[in-house]
Structure formats: C-alpha cells, structure tokens
Length: 144
Image (cartoon, rainbow, N blue to C red; front, side):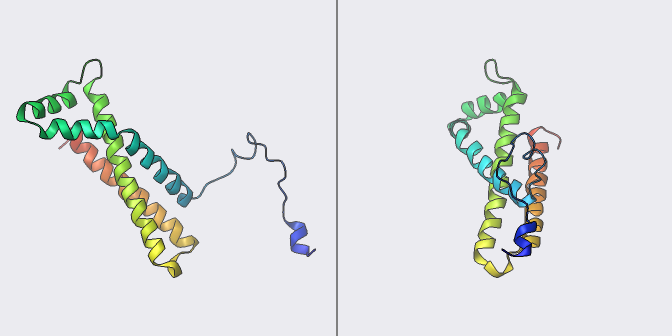
C-alpha cells in the first residue's frame, strides 16, 4: 500500500445526523437536484396547467372566470395562493429549461467540461432562472 492511500480518510459508518449536516454541496449539485424537483413540480401541476389553458382559450366568459380566479380566487382557495402556485410553475419551467440547456451544452462540448465550468454554469442557471422568475412574478402580481 502506498503512503497516499494510508493518509486518506476512511468512512465505514456514516452517521446521518453528524456527517451529512456538515457536507456542503456544490452549486452544480444543487442545480441537478432542483432540475429533478422542477420536473416533478411541472408533472404534479399538469392538471392545473391543463385547467389554465382550457379555461383561458374556451370562450370570453371562461377567460373572465380565469382572470377572476387570479384576483378573487376559486371557492375557498384565495387568489394570492393561485398566483403563488402559478409562480412556482413559472420558476420550475424556467429553471428546468435553463438547466436543460446547461446539460445539452455539456453534452455537446465534452472537452470544455471541468470543475470551474460546472460551478460558473450552475451559478448562471440560478441567476438567469431566478431573475426571469422575479420579472414574470412581478408581472403576475401586478407590479408593472
């Protein structure tokens, strides 16, 4: 056995409460996890998406009901909650799209993939998706 192999720490029994709380994930790991989470959010909210599309394009009366749902709500669900769900859907689509473009770029340019590129591209995915979600959220909540 070499001297380097002897100095390396061995983790045989990982204590989930002690060891996992001190582990710091990289931005690329967060983007990967949130890419999966955003896909799950879009899948789970698919009935809401279909309802929004169907209600908004059926007729002028149904579009007025659709607009009123965002302002006053539906039944016991307030309008601000429907806006928050729509904002979560907007963020999940934007994040999933930006992270997907990042993954496609990494698949196309294998030679350009390194640790630094992973960090900068992950941070740019966060910046772009959050900035676009804030702009569209401001429009959704009527700030402009």
